[in-house]
Structures are given as C-alpha cells and as structure tokens.
Length: 109
Image 1 (cartoon, rainbow, N blue to C red):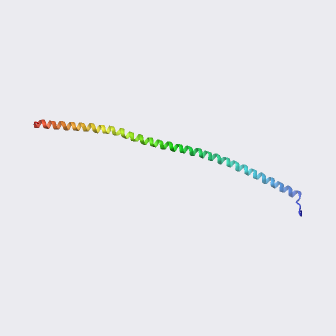
Image 2 (image 1 turned 60 degrees about the vertical axis):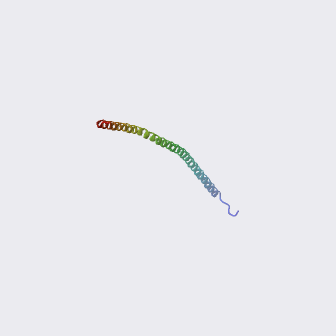
Image 3 (image 1 turned 60 degrees about the horizontal axis):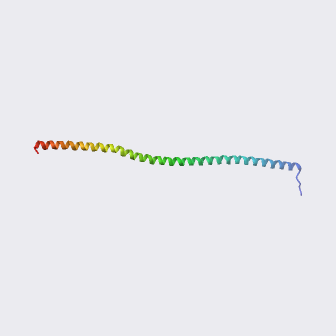
C-alpha cells in the first residue's frame, strides 16, 4: 500500500456510507409506502370497475324490460281505441240501416 488512509478519512468514509445507507433505507420505505397506496388504489379501481359492469348489465336489463312494458302499454292503449272504433262502426252501421229501412218503408218496399 502506497498511501494508507488516515483514521479520520476512514471515519469520514464510514459516516458517509452509513448516511447513504440510511438515505437509501428511507427512500426504500417511502417507495414501499407509495407502492402500498398504489396497490390499494388499483384494488379500489378494480372493485369500482366490477360495480360499473354490474350496473351496466342491470341498466341494460331495465331498458329491455322497459321496452317490453312500452309495447304492452301500447297494446293496451290500442285496445281501447279499437273497441271505440268498433262501437262507433256498429253505431254508424245501425244508423245507416235504420235510415235505409226508413227510406224503403217510405217508398213502399
């Protein structure tokens, strides 16, 4: 060894190594905490995604049910309209029959 280091240089290097080791340990701890937070966020996003998928399927099923109910409601509404048209058709036919019968009676047939 050509140039041995002094005790003070050794202590200074040892202190620098320990300080650097402590800094790296602190950095590792911060990174581990960040990773834990990110993992929790990813878990929450996964849960949220699953909930949104279930909600979308539920809404899709509700839309289908609403469409079928709309068709049934339209049929029910049309029934009343059809019934009214039939009744008025029968009344008009009866009135025309009475008028024609009255005319034939006046002519003498």
